[in-house]
Length: 541
Image (cartoon, one colour):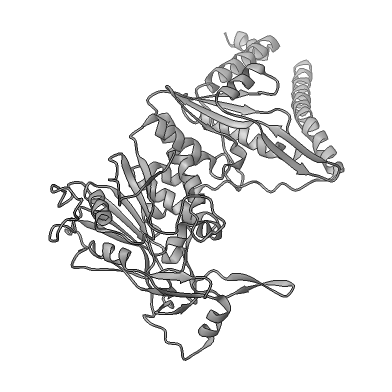
């Protein structure tokens, strides 16, 4: 028996058979078990637990059709490969709940027809290198199909947070609950429409919201009720709030709605370079729920964003403490709404205070009151006429005789969750209000107050490099019970910096790419040959 087993172990045919069986067994097992690791600094292919949880718990599979052109400009090759690898990893992490298919409309007429049916068209992409300018129209689009629902991402190369965009679209197709976002229209200068004035345009916010939530409703509460399907209402520096406006906003909170209210107690006059106390519409409305909006402006000489100005032939940065910045140490970073937010930008902001009589805090108060962002301990306020012209403001700052009021840290964002009481319990109803109304909420509502309307304007979005919008979008997700999506916003799209290599280095790496595997296999074969030769010599000796 021993001799037979010894001969079997030395048999070349037996070794070959065992190797083939091991290879086939490993290949079969690899379908069910796999391991991948993204060791890059950017972590481009690493998926969050939120994405994996969402995909693996889908009630039914989602189909992902990736329309990728095979012929792309050289400058985009690395980026395209990264996107292909990401989508492959995305589907592989779903435990079979995401079915990925790559299509090339340039070489496949059926794929091109399918893309046209979905409203997908090629996008221009190009680059300028030392030899020529490459311009081409290529497909880099994704279509998601879940049941009878279809959604698309027209150009994934332009997506800043592709993982979030994919997962949020799939999540909202799989769990539709008609969460609608609305904007209070007809009450001031701020508009969702594209505008040349970045101070009052909310176009960037609108584009981001529509990408993730679909069309945004505009509602004028002076003439219309707030529809029941609206879960979140965005109010930006309203002017001339009538009693019926206030009543409808109040009843929205009473039914458990999410009210995001952004307002400052100061009105800007950019021509005169000054800010004065604004109308008290917002302050009066918020005061009924225990939040006091100051009629002054916060200046922070420690944490601010400088204002770039051209002086002669150079650009200089002027201290501009009315552009307050809240870095991580002044944020309530452990709060769900603040996940992944390193800083926030508050241009022309007012302080917020709370009234403990109307808004009690504590374990048994029934309210959760969170101060999410604050100014530094060196900040102070100015009231009445505040200089906002950068050069005149600099003179004021440098003047030691200028009074600095309320020195210390000031609240800039307040978040309240609880069952509010209507402000119309003890006062007359507006003429157009129904006699039957909700006097006390049966479901907890949320009130998020940000002390400047410019935080989410195009100005705030651009100057904060999108961080202000990320905060607001995360807040909307959280308010609507989609906390799993918030973690995805931590991952910003980062394009790896690939350095150009010389021709000689490229040729050497290409040679090593082929030579090293062959050399490795040859070395193993040589070692095996020498070992067998030694055994034969010993046996014959």
